[in-house]
Structure formats: structure tokens, C-alpha cells
Image: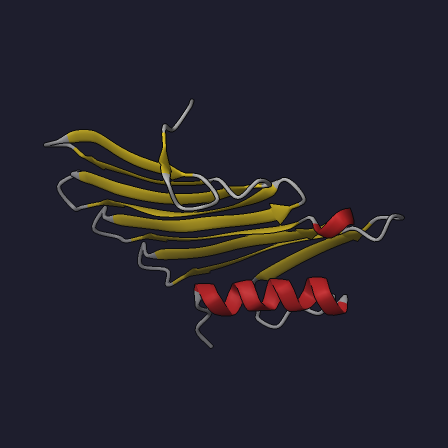
Length: 160
């Protein structure tokens, strides 16, 4: 049975929510921890290899804390026998001080060319927002753009 990134994240979230410990797929490993204060953490991975030099891995984790704090991360890595590779991943977290979400990917072609991108959005506890995008290519280098706004949507300077 093929495991997709959304399916793995759903499995990790379900395990965190319901306290499941049984792995649903061969080659899968899930670990979890419950704290005395009601918090919980789950982490898992799945790796598949076809024996011909192609390998695929999924990793993910999630946490739940006090005061509504929660977050998750997930990634998918494919390495091919021809030398090409691709990694996609993302994370999200939220709590009393705001929220953040980021996702990105990087690819390596058979000739070694590397390209990547990442987008990130965040909202602070007062409603100010950040939206940023970073790209990389061997030919163009790194490019970054960012916009910030206050809780009314009015543009404001992005501070470092």
C-alpha cells in the first residue's frame, strides 16, 4: 500500500488524538509521549526502497500543549537511482502568541542542478501578519520577498 504525505500526516494526527500505538504499514515507526499536564507528542517515519537504488521516506510529527499550543511538521524525500532527488516539507504551529505555517521544496536533477522554494506565513497575537517567499536556483541565486501588515490589513515594514 502506497503512503502519501497527507495520509501520513493524518495517521500521525490520528495517533496523537486517539493514542494509537499500532503501526498501519510495514516499515513504519511511530513513537508517542503524553505529559502529566495533558500535552502530547507523536513522531513517525516510513521508508520504502525498491532495491534498485530508489528510496522514499516520509517523516512527520505533531505536538499538543497547554493553552491551545499545537503544531505539526511533515516531510517527504525521494532519492532516485539516477541521482535526482526531491524533498518537500512543511510545518505549522499555533498558540496564544500567534501562528506560523511554512512549506517548501528542493529538487536536484540528474545533472546536479538544484532548485528550491519556501513560503512562510505568520500571524502575531495582535493580528499583524508576515508573508514571505524565498527561492533558490543555481543560475539566479537566492531571492526573497516579504510583506507585512497590521491587523487592519495596512502594510507595515517587516522588521528582522
